[in-house]
Image 1 (cartoon, rainbow, N blue to C red):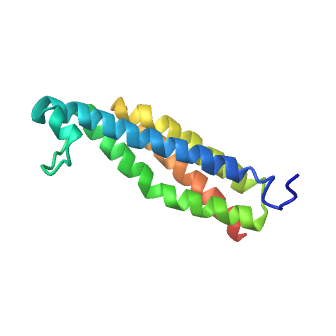
Image 2: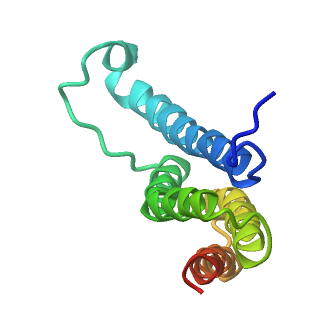
Length: 141
């Protein structure tokens, strides 16, 4: 039986699920870009070392690339704050709800961005930032 003070932290599974979200971003970007590149450069480009650079020009591949980049801008902050809250031992309150808000907003951001939905997508992004802010408040105060 693990009696570590970190074993019961709800932030650890959230960090694990955030990695799944990262992988979803990476795969969406990779598959959409590869499908587009195969059409213009051929299947050998996908199988090869990709010495010839390729920038996606299609809507979905471009959106997947930008959504992934946007996710990776806030992801280190989430992981850092979550791990710091694990060390602090704060398993409830602002930090916990902030982490869930960040995760939920980042999850809904994907289809909103890929679908080209304006305004609501920006609200999802703002919600994720509010989640990070709540985690920060829980850590510092």
